[in-house]
Image 1 (cartoon, rainbow, N blue to C red):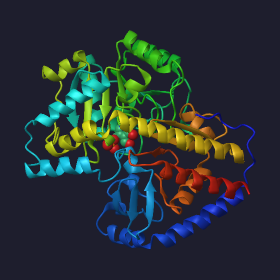
Image 2 (tube, helix red, strand yellow):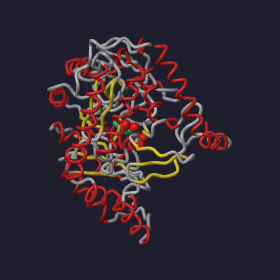
Image 3 (cartoon, helix red, strand yellow):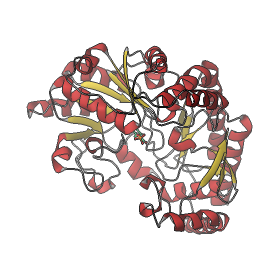
Image 4 (cartoon, rainbow, N blue to C red):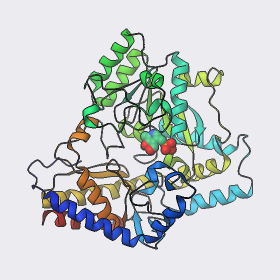
Length: 463
Ligand SMILES: Cc1ncc(COP(=O)(O)O)c(C=O)c1O
């Protein structure tokens, strides 16, 4: 990670707004077929999309196909993909090994709701990677975090949950609390507000969910003690070991070790939500990368190599409540043979040690390239990355948690960077909170193009 540049140039905000307007017009002209599809989609799909996170004004960019590091949109525009399906396609698109596994499995039947051998092979490999002995499967990240929290509640007999303010863990009620909040609504730094993320979340659920800020272990200790005193000690702490929805925010030295000690001392189950970090930052995700062992791990996204597959890892003690029938962890499509075949190929053939070495090389290269651009143009920005993930954070202050993100991150520059990149063949996740995900099919040339486009942007805004 580079150090935030404090003596950065003063940016001309009018120029940034003018460039954004010009680039948006160019993008709209280049993506007319997406516009037409959106009009048609609006006749049958609510708001024209399958998930509200696919929305974008004036229309989403519809993709037609992807191969390796590239995708093509409905107008035939070609891009290098750094979005990679919200961080799911670390294998690259249409990977032959995964295609082969899916095709072979298809011929033998795709769904029985009875167990198959691949589920055992996947469990063995996940146990090895994440140092957790017991596994169950789901079909998404939300299902993984929902079931993990239920298991923690079943184990402890407690209802309350502690999370990190601003962290996203999926779309079930318990975790749709205290995210996407405006700066002035965050509340007391020591006991931030519990606020519903959109309507439809019962107030009773919101009241059971408490939040503390990332990178502040003392606040976590204090909050658990307070909640315990009030008779509502949390069943679990659910958190990402490195936050992946404020760009990338890494844990400060000693933070995760302190969290592990605090949760153990209080008898609170520690869940590392590795839906984003799991397959992308190391073979054994944050557990391997940071060397801290949680009681549970949740996986999804890149696990299934593009198929909707999730998993929950548990210690033997935690898994007991599933095994003795105290908690039901169930689902018709859990361990689906097609998903398991893809996951098996993904883990054993694609995401190998060599693949991670390649990703680390590429990430070092793209970060060094972006660092050089930031330094040359004295941009109010810094780079941060880990494994296959990273971003340029447009801020003069280092972002360590949600309040510093809201205070310091520059939304106008983030928006311009997105549209600028799209018009130059770099497909990025829309939204100021996202980061790049590299794939094993990316090359030096791919990441160099990213840096080149960023360099052109830097020149345009500082000219
Ligand atoms: C950390 C984390 N957990 C859980 C989820 C939810 O996963 P899904 O969208 O597959 O339900 C996400 C999705 O972005 C996530 O980033």
